[in-house]
Length: 350
Ligand SMILES: Nc1ncnc2c1ncn2[C@@H]1O[C@H](COP(=O)(O)OP(=O)(O)O)[C@@H](O)[C@H]1O
Ligand SMILES: [Mg+2]
Image (tube, rainbow, N blue to C red; front, side):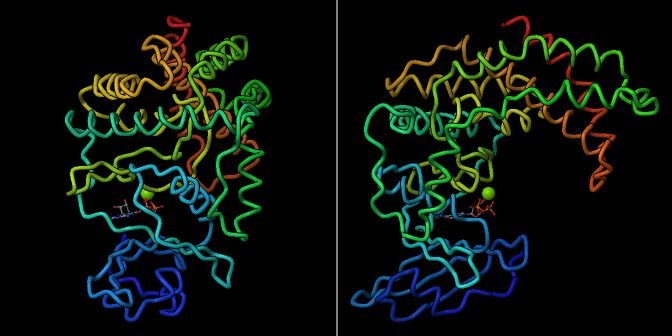
């Protein structure tokens, strides 16, 4: 992250996204910058026939099609946990510019219980409301309104409609890769093979039960990356969700994939339980679709096994294929070390 990155978005392109009646852009500042050609700016402008400045968060670059699509759908559904969409345009180079209302506020600190509970409660309410709406994607009921989806987003929309139905990410890759890799003696030693191999074999045997557990939690819309930096506590007293780049429709327990990993590293181990409880309570408070604590907890344990198994599988595959852009061996060892314990925990709730 840097604050002094050059603006690469032309003033004309920016004005077109903000408002065709923009008279003058008063101030623009890059405040978040990761890769070249990709940026986030805070832009202040004065709309024509108005003397009150407006402020937008403008995000641009490649790969924002899904986010733009989600923002359009959210706007149509009048969801208030997401900053309002101001405009969205495709750039000549194929990238997307997305402008949302700037929310003055702070990033929560999920290592404190108060922020964690507030964040999870807000997220759960959002998720519960979407549990009812996403049913429309699965053949029963009217599809979500498509109003406001620009023509250039049509392919992305179609992609979303076909792939959100696809729950095959739970396919059993592990057994295949483990079998080929465990032939390799040096790796075998490093992986502490007996534990990892036993866990792998058992997981393969009960994979469908784990998957069933995960899929027994209601489907909903998941921003795809629920973490502290993608939440915002506004000075207006409301909490917001940001960053829908990896938006997906999945069993609700998947919301905790990343947050669960983050909280695991906290000294107070029980913070994860606090988060899960707050989420279940927040969800049930909406009364849309019931979510049982035992089911949710069991599904979460199952999902963690899946995640670790998939990660181990990926590391082993990369080692076999010589794709060593990261320390695949160390990652594999770490996954193999954690897997048996996670598996044991999941089995007690299966
Ligand atoms: N509408 C907004 N108002 C204020 N700040 C925002 C807004 N949208 C994003 N941000 C800030 O910018 C950061 C990066 O935005 P995000 O959409 O998460 O981009 P990235 O995909 O690069 O993570 C967020 O963590 C948040 O601090
Ligand atoms: Mg983010």
